[in-house]
Image (cartoon, rainbow, N blue to C red; front, side, top):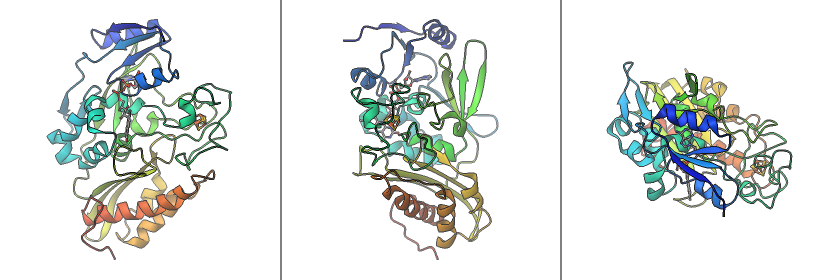
Length: 338
Ligand SMILES: Cc1cc2nc3c(=O)[nH]c(=O)nc-3n(C[C@H](O)[C@H](O)[C@H](O)COP(=O)(O)OP(=O)(O)OC[C@H]3O[C@@H](n4cnc5c(N)ncnc54)[C@H](O)[C@@H]3O)c2cc1C
Ligand code: SF4
């Protein structure tokens, strides 16, 4: 039994004041990850600051044609919101590929960004884990690492970030709005999560006394040619082995603009400018897609049980880009790319 205090934040400023006053306090939103971590004794907050009544539940158009999503918008509401379903269907598709209906009803937009890795050793307090206990070692590097990272790893940690939503947000160039004790700031989604390096205990660049208030999407939604392809051990209610958010703008048979982000392969949603550059200006065909996959995976490294992820990712990238080019976001493609 862990004893903790429970308080409610009255507004964003109060939430930030409360978290700044107690170094061991945690915000609680949908509770779908934090409470599990408390049950496993991985998280031991001194206080839970309930932020669920803060006015951060809106989805609104911005003056420059984008959309601002409040941090407390439930995942389900976001996926079904007309602005998202019509203008950012890749995001809707990624959200719907995650968790279960019940979990998506509870899970918040901000909480999804901050969910922690699903590395089994992280959840098992009887095993060494640098992310849970810095300096204790990494049980996964020579252990059961089938679900672990192949890109951006370090000797300290090979965990992956488990979110689906964040992969689409990275491809769409979303920004994260945060508020702290003295100021507000914006962090690009691609800079929000960190690589493990020698400090895997830090998942993100959010300071501990900051709160996520909103996510902002730019106007470009890639609603015509996109795919979110999630490859997992069973068809629903499983985390990605590899997932791919692929979005294209086409000019005839050529690629005008391309976005490619991968989930399940790194400590953060993996987006590689060189792979996107390998697509831009090229013919939208299988040879181009295979070249881009090779560029993206050039430094990929397996740890034994997860070696298969490298070829899975390569084939997944080609398939996702083919589907995107065909305008067929689902797994079956009805046209054949040359
Ligand atoms: C069985 C299961 C299967 C799942 N499958 C998937 C899946 O396939 N794909 C997927 O993407 N996700 C999956 N999830 C994860 C789920 O999406 C996350 O648990 C959820 O999005 C977290 O949101 P929450 O609001 O419940 O966060 P909480 O559990 O309330 O909080 C999580 C963390 O975020 C912090 N936090 C929350 N909101 C804020 C804020 N606004 N500002 C600062 N800090 C904040 C909390 O302090 C805490 O540290 C699964 C979860 C479960 C339990
Ligand atoms: S991969 Fe990371 S989270 Fe998993 S045991 Fe190693 S240090 Fe811990």
